[in-house]
Structures are given as structure tokens and as C-alpha cells.
Image 1 (cartoon, rainbow, N blue to C red):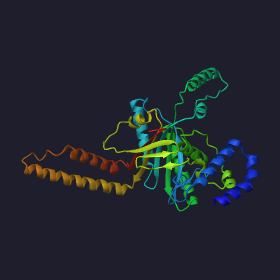
Image 2: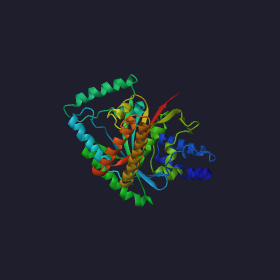
Image 3: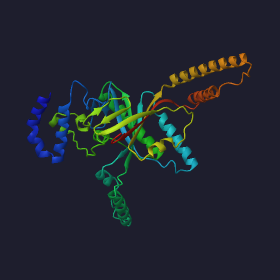
Image 4: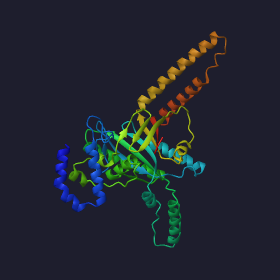
Length: 369
């Protein structure tokens, strides 16, 4: 394979040299070196990246004919809103989530990543508008640049929603993905949230920023490079190597990381919980993998749980009678879980709400232990 790839390189050497800058050439050479180093006896870093193909329009095939697209969305001033506005935002968010039926898997990703000085300088630059406020814009930009010069690189915080469906082919998946994408963008608009769909290059750029935290190098890639170099998209985003020696920690290039899952048993959550995670001034990625349960299956599951709780309640009452206690005194957990299960069943049956299965993951990264 690599002999053929090198031959293809020589054939296209003159063509590539005429089109690419020196930085672009270095990017392609680095990708080729990573491909050449791939040890086929074990998984290479490219093999460890779990997708099969990325298309220019932003559709990605992961595994088993599962196709996804990604939407980037901005924040909303929820915490600063009045209570009635908070209620309206929350109800709108519930309607937003209820859109996803059991055939659509989706993931909310919240990325707090340290930015390179060049990237951060671009993100805080305020372009002039040729109006009376340009002097204020210039003064504010200078203040931010001075802070940057003192070493306050800060974090770039981004938010994404990735959704996927099962389909026999990309042609079959594309029209439905586009319909879902349009619905999600309209739902974000109703919430007052700015959002945009990511094309294939932007999705690859985001993956590159995660896999290359240790290098902070800009992402360079064009789709026509794949034909001229014989490489795949993974070769342009893969880190130098992955290392998974233990089940808890891993190494990605020079970056050390660990992923923890959050198990939530509380019937209610404070609306500040996720915000408190994301307010941490450290490199952090929070992922919520969410799948809607089919409505009929969800109702049957809750009914079975209520039956099990009632059975446990009867057993506790029998024990109380045998021990000479009041049979109305039962463990508080049984009473709490029973009430919550009945409330959930009522919501599913009468309020057209959905039941979701959620996996809550937090990834921390650092340069050393």
C-alpha cells in the first residue's frame, strides 16, 4: 500500500508543488509520515478514530450504516433572565428535546479548550464597522490584546449538537438528515439561539483541535489533497499516537486525559449544574449522549417499575406487621421512588413527554499527571 502511495506521490509531486504553500506541504508530509508509521499488527491512531468516512457537506458515516451531522450553537442568557423568562426558555427547551424520537440519536458536546495565541487573537478581534463606535471597538480590542500579551490565553468555549440516524446508504440518509437539520435550526431560532451547520472541513477542524491539544498547530486541509496524496481525512487529524494502558487514563500525543461518567440519582437537578461544570477554568469536554425511548416501551418500563416498587412496599408492610410496627411506616426511598415513578408515568401518558436514556461524560486533559 505504501509503495503505491509513494509512487502516486512522485507522479503528483510537480502538480502539488505548483499549488501548495510550504505550510501546506508540511501538513501533507506530516500526514504521510503518520500513515507510513501505522503498524498494522496493532491499531494505529487513525484506526482508533471511530468513523469510516467524512463527506464535504458534513455528513459522516460512523459504523454500521450510522450517519451523522453536527450543528454548532451559541449560548443563551438563561441565568440573567427573569423567572417568567426562565420558565418560557425551559418550556421551549423541553419542546426542543421532545422533537427527537427514538429513531434519532443525538449528543450535546461542550468544549472548553485552551486556544493558541494566534487563534485566540483572531477570536477577540473586533472588526471596524465604519461608524461612530469604531473608536470604542478599537479601544476594547487593544485592551483584550494587552491582556493576551500578558499571557492570559484563556479558553475557547464552543457547543455542538450532533445527531445521527440509521440508513442503508449516504444517498438514503442525506434527505432525512437535511430535514432534521432544518427542523433543529428552526427550533434553535425559536429559542433565540444562534446556530449553524458544520460542513465536513469544519467538523474535521474541530476534531483536529481536540487531537492536537499538545501542538496547537493550525489545521490545513483541502478535499483535493486526498486524491493527489492518496491519504484519508483521518491522516490529517490523527495525533502522533494514542495510548490506552489503563481503563481510566489515556495519552493522546503529549496530552494526558481521563474520562469520568456522572451517575445522577436525584429526582430533580439544579439548573446551575451544567453551568458549574463549564465554568471551570481548565481544559474540559462534557458530552451528553442522549437517546429517546420509544413511547410505548417507556410506558411499559415505568409500569413494570411501579409494580416492582408496590411489591417491595407490600413486603416491607408484612415485615412491619410481623415485628409489631405500624404498617404505614416504610422506607423513605420506596415512598420517594414510587411517587416519582407515578409522576413520570403521568407525564408520559398525559403531557406527551418523552423518556430519555442519557450518558453523561466528562473528559479532563492536562500536559502531565
